[in-house]
Length: 323
Image (tube, rainbow, N blue to C red; front, side, top):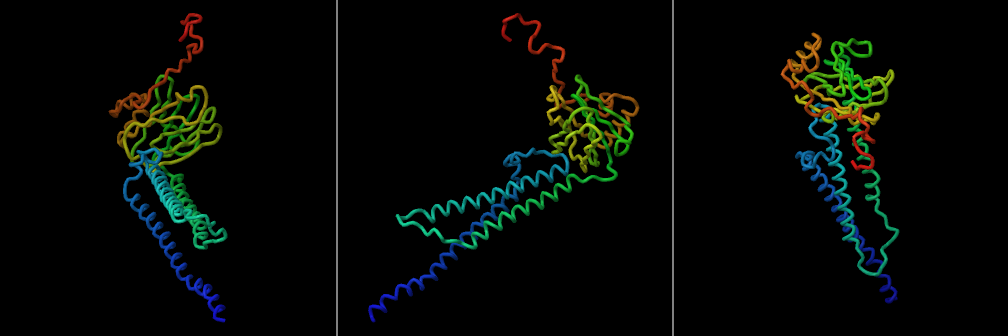
């Protein structure tokens, strides 16, 4: 009987060891909590400084000149910081598991053990992250694409192979009247003059194929459709005066790369004077000179299209001679 009683002691000992196992689990949970707090602290510290400028905007264009561009930029930077925080947390867990559960002998670890808190974490956390990102994306997108009934300035953007026409309108829609116009040519880059501090509505249409209206500093790139489609968007204001290059960002034919324009942002007073000069019959270059601006584009220049040159078989090259 004594022998039997001594044989049943090990189960009691194993049972008494369970509090120690619970302690280890609590310590593991504490480590996880510490990693989570560390990631949160990292996120807070990163958002407290100009992370976008430090890391080159994480690939996003900097120097936006509209409130909409700033909102989109902030959303991008916050998303990148959140992704980095999640990445650091996951990397920390991976390296901790590599060290904590490294092989210490030839005994195979338990293969059927599970951890309910951990499974709950990696199931719920991604759902929460996606939900938060979706919410803020929807908020920013709704704000960015919002249009108003009475914008201060309305410009009709007309694209064609391979240049631009900018019509200053007295209202919205295709039935509004054009009060002034700027037409680009192969020799002169078209300049779109707009004021600071006023809401601006862009109404885009194409005469032939699909083009794309893009000013990098505005962070808007909108397709310009042919036919009866008028692609419309607005910016609540332009914040900085200056000259900004604009491009066609949709492959539209042989001379797509030459289809540039310039956005010239001036003060409201200069804009009113420019528009008055255009109404009086002056050219765009004369009107720009009248308000003290450079009459020609400064951010880009006309390209040599070589439309009148035999590009592949120049006439002035002898047969068999290399180029």
